[in-house]
Image 1 (cartoon, helix red, strand yellow):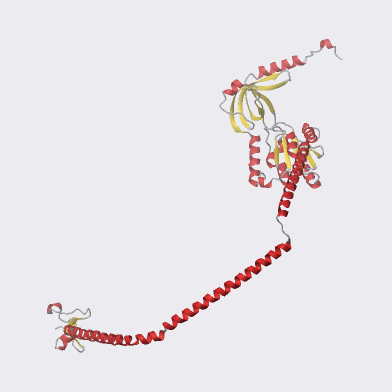
Image 2: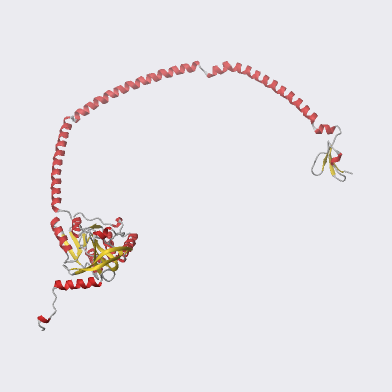
Length: 442
């Protein structure tokens, strides 16, 4: 072994300082492109995030002075081109980009993939509220799909034991990040549905980067959640993290602990509520009993003996029978008197007597009517004869009977009054009193 005095030994601090010097001298100011992930702004106002691509990721920070003058807005999923320098944070021995300027390139590949899958599943109806299952009020067994060694499982168990210790917990251990995690989650959901031990399933994991949450943004996990016959509550990452699984789940909680709180009620509160309801029921029953007892006593004082009621009813029936008999007799007498009066009036106004009385008047009127009608007919016949004679005097037939004729052209039947109206050889016709003569002009 070489002597220690001949070795060039670096302390951790010296090595870190050396690396920092090399990096900062080699890359004083560079342009870097990537997609923003794990973006956060603490109380200091500085922005901390990672720049990622398909093969790597690097920590980055932009101080609030530079952040205030940016034209674009930094957010998870945004793809940017940034100008900055590489620096090493010596207390942790990590290197990071300290950015001075950034320009947006739009949504990054990871964010675009996330939005495309979200839009596809939404159009298929996997996120519709109509497909959401209701969470049982008091599940007897709670299924938990998560990493068996993660903090999420411990948080869920602590919350369940604190809220309702009687609830059984069935753990389905799976990987929650990395290759094969999505397939294990799908298998766990299908196993829980086959066994049907749990009333509710919590799908949970702690916080992480976009890459760490990738299994929960996979299509197969979303479809498995949608196909589950057992309601699923998701508690994935932190409150600001939203995954495809959260949209497909029946309920979404911001954290694993909150998912446990959504799944089971507080036993002590239920017990106190039951005791309060029991006291109120007893009080209401006593109050109703007292009210009904008072009503029964009051009604019993107003009840008479049935025989007495029957006797009173008999007396009322006899009285009403007698009154109805007297009323019927009175009505019959009135009707009889009315018939007598009517019969007397009819005898005084016999229609036969009336007809005989007015028959002579009718005969006289008929004679006058016939005389008037005869005069009217005679007058009109005389007037009609005079009109006929006048018409016959003016008739062309009467004129022609005195030796006159009518000459017309053929074939248009135009009456001729002047010899100049026809030409030689033209056909004409001559109408006589009886018949006609066809002729030709010479």
